[in-house]
Length: 162
Image (cartoon, rainbow, N blue to C red; front, side):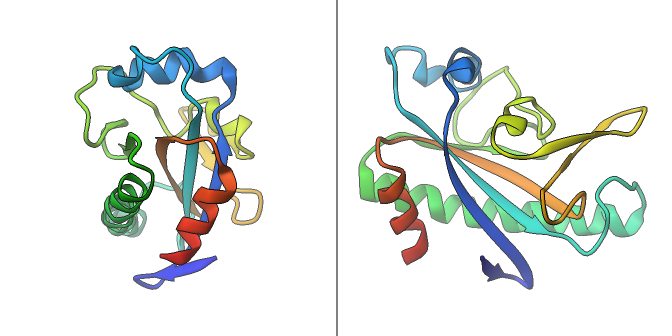
């Protein structure tokens, strides 16, 4: 657990489940030419003051601040991972659900079933779904980076050193 701009941040490193490789290759077209890359998913969870399942001015303002914080943190992490490993890295811009660096027409929403495989749950609200964290519930903003790498331990060490 770390703290940035007054927000608690939890960073997790996960292996991309094999069943999602084809979908992720569509989101990130540069991966389509690689036969079977070892893709890691780095989740960045920011604990929120407001319940993100609500839609009001306070939630929208906090979500905007969390979005800016996520993008800033993700840009730093992406550069550090790229410099350290020399491998491909990109992240999903939560405001558009599209890759940040790469051009793509495929989206990865924060309520995609992939996140249930990474330990999150989805809450059905009737009109929409919202992601939930095992400790924070719906008081969370979740973003994700994707990179090529074989060693979860190496990535965790790099992330802890930042």
